Image: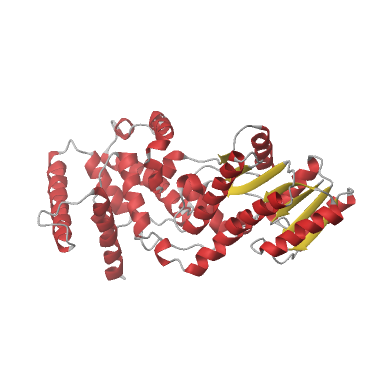
Length: 410
């Protein structure tokens, strides 16, 4: 039989084609919209042909129903009966959902959604008895990904289609991949890979590791799984969905492993104030390194964190990280005063040294002043005379205050 791989002329799609050959396939149909093959992919395809594998490359837009039907008819009549389909085609066009255009939505969703549906219908219409029908989804369907609403929605459809096919007695599986390190889009776009990893933690997957996992999925009775190496303590800090009830087990695991971070009060016991300050700076640099994805040598502790590249969302993330790591509730407004790492560390050290009555008194006054500022700002932003807000409203307002401060300082 023959095996059709969409998006199969490069990257992870071509890697999948090679894996199919390793598992016994001797006839491949690899398609993309343009059928362009770069030099690296051409070498891989030639190597497959040298091994006696028939490799047919075709230009076919999977969103064109008629073109796809013609292609499958050609495969049936001129190549070999179609035994398997892997839908690996993808397009990315990121942006915040509130700013996302109709064009961006269609560009990303059409190849996956319309393409998958056309493959599904074509395989039924021709009464093909497929051994495998695999959809390549993304692990972002489980936790979301800011800026990729169109991509997450498209992959959610693929997973639903797999469930639909199985309910009708048809073969179907999906693999919701995390970041793949050595082939495909992320291998070509290091910045995007680093940004994704900063949100997910953990490590990107090697393609060989991914293929071994795909085989396990196909041999199991599961519809599909998410395949990702992640750090849940990182995810729950930046992904709102991570706090939902369905991740309760993972949340408990993170809490049970909190001992990995030794209690700060234990660490600073018997230390002088200067030693505590030095430790806090060191730990704070660890957190800012992760948020900004910058090496430590590029972090000047005397430079404003916003000049280092921090934006308002990252500022909120830093405040949450400080609370988690040091057990200190730093006022969000502290980041709007041109704060640098040194000054932030001093504020944390002052709160940690709570045995000093003067420090406690000072911090109490500061906290009350901060609460007054928030109450006044809340009233100005229409949250009632008493300034009471929900947690979400407070977070949104804090973000706005940071943004306003950044604009005024620039």
